[in-house]
Length: 359
Ligand code: NAD
Ligand code: IPM
Ligand code: MN
Image (cartoon, rainbow, N blue to C red; front, side, top):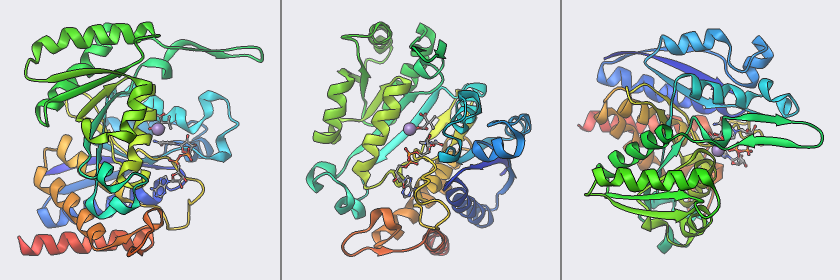
């Protein structure tokens, strides 16, 4: 298969974890006879420094000419005092909006080998397997007006029925491929947008009689994610709640460095990036956990290219390396063999080779 992939490493640990994912993709291409043409482009703070824009036109063009986008992370203290339109995060928000990537899939799955690294008790964290479906191109992040003066500031929370319908449909379709349950998370006891959200879920569920649907208020959902995370299958929610709940849920797996994501639209085009940020505290030290980025590349193979066996091979290789006790510093613990980002990636690639030979 021949595919062009736009690679946008970004800032902080972004380039380190993206390099890792690229190495894994190259290994897959070689072994399975694919041709992945990788085109690097700038985003975030690095793009501001080089091109005076967090998302240069040239980067948009590279992405438009590609079949999918692989992204690292953006942001860092260097750019924190910039005005909103010149912040690295603006580049990420603009690319999501430009390509209409409204559905953000964030799978949270407990890894048996990492249960001891989870802050939750093993019996609570074990067998957790949920999919957070976060609306990504509307809500508080994008609503107008949006402004700040010295005396006051405004953000606007707005959702149209159509925007809610398409993400809710996505969650029902997702539940059909899983355990058949959708938890819709909102704040319908206070927010008008949430009332509309709940109405749409009630209406759409008529078309999915096979799916069990529950509504949950976001504050209660935040609590239940920690007390009873196994009770969730698919969680569908608006942009801001999804952002917060997914970082919370990530630690069930032991580390934020484990959580991949796919931001997709209906035609299969997508942007793939770890859920974590640029981690300025460990950037440039060859310490970052590259698993989230590597697993995001696997999601790309599956969702955008339909390469299911290749995606499964990557997942199995990462799990097997973790199973052997190898990990990066974020997962340090008894019986663990902590190694650098580069050494961890080398182990994953070794494991991929072993899997391939034994097939
Ligand atoms: P962060 O996710 O970058 O880091 C939070 C904590 O988790 C840090 O202690 C960090 O060291 C650790 N961590 C994160 N990823 C890790 C990994 N792969 N391996 C090991 N440890 C890891 O969040 P933050 O510190 O709040 O934000 C830093 C910057 O990143 C900010 O500028 C923020 O806007 C940006 N950010 C970007 C994205 C993105 O690009 N998608 C996401 C979140 C935050
Ligand atoms: C994420 C990040 C982004 C978000 C930021 C960096 C704009 O936190 O992808 O989760 O809030 O969506
Ligand atoms: Mn986030």
